[in-house]
Image (cartoon, rainbow, N blue to C red; front, side, top):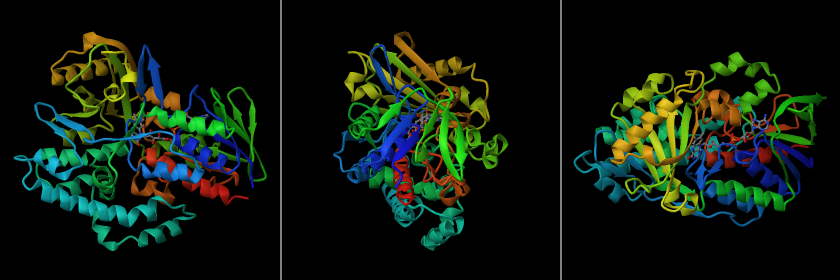
Length: 490
Ligand SMILES: Cc1cc2nc3c(=O)[nH]c(=O)nc-3n(C[C@H](O)[C@H](O)[C@H](O)COP(=O)(O)OP(=O)(O)OC[C@H]3O[C@@H](n4cnc5c(N)ncnc54)[C@H](O)[C@@H]3O)c2cc1C
């Protein structure tokens, strides 16, 4: 059994894998290019304000429960269930939709908007639940050794779902609802996968089941970064070592095995087995120089959208918003069709606002609010010049101020902006694509970059661009799958 493990990257996938292995007696060392752990699940602290940098809620908390059980520890952080899940505001309308999990409370809001909403939504959710039950264990929670074995597994999926597989998310939602409000609200979740309802397969409507019926969404007491600090703490109790400001740029191999990874200062890092938590496609291309992931090939793969995120501290509290808020425009279809590729969409952007200080008062000085904005934008394949980012941010702040009837611009005491350039440079995300590789049918399961290396028998991958995909629960599942591989590795 290999004892010394080197993990490149301290994203949630890396930390969870490290914890599973350290709790089994492995000696785990992390090397991380940044000066703190977490990857995209990060934190920004400045002038008395604390912001979650990326993820602001998660589903499937049972995956974290499985993780801690597997490691024989108690849950080191506290879940906070969201209800309402979030609010949705449409440009030009005073009405605010509260997305309650209770179907009666939710349906009340569609009175006079979507006839028979409750009946339609119940039927829609039933189909989503069937999809979830019939696919999740087969396609998401398994390691596949070959494309034929993956295809064989897919054949076990109930054939009643075949018609769904040839539809888009949007088409599926359209077959249940007639009003723009219901269609847009129900399909919004496709954006959480880093694409739009118009280019996301209808099989992902199973996410609506997770969102409304299965688990809903959760925050963590103290802010999302508590997940990272508590996992790091558990790892340190098990003697794991964290080395920061260390970026792996090269490697050495011998006899089909990786012998060392080399950092930016030429220092060699040796181990019995290596786990790459950096992007599984980009790392193969840039560090291992694999032809399949050469720059031209990478640019032809399908990537998720970029995000323009900004973090502002204001010296007022905002009663008009909740913890999680979506602000949509009134050209959804056109917007969604353009947002991945057309910088013109940024004139009237759609955006999400998180007020972390609403439920975590420690995240802002007294009487202040910490706000985190996320705006979907083209990644660097489609927009390279971000010199206009301040203008875009100003337009969003103006739009937000108008919609909440309060000019917040004069109350801003702290502001930090991340364009896809910052996302790329800080976390080595290919072209700043926020969620990594997209989840097209030909980029999931056995078609996604594998969680074991094609050439080095002692090298494995975990995280968003290997299996099963993006999002916090998927990172935890990814850690389970790669751990299985490592435990079987001699
Ligand atoms: C704006 C935004 C909002 C999001 N919101 C949500 C949400 O609300 N809910 C949700 O579930 N998910 C959300 N996600 C997705 C979620 O953040 C990711 O899927 C998840 O955090 C990815 O974890 P990972 O294990 O792949 O590692 P990553 O977070 O990608 O971490 C990889 C680490 O490897 C390091 N690294 C890379 N290359 C090297 C190298 N060569 N040498 C050393 N270190 C290296 C990086 O610095 C990084 O720390 C969001 C993502 C973004 C960008």
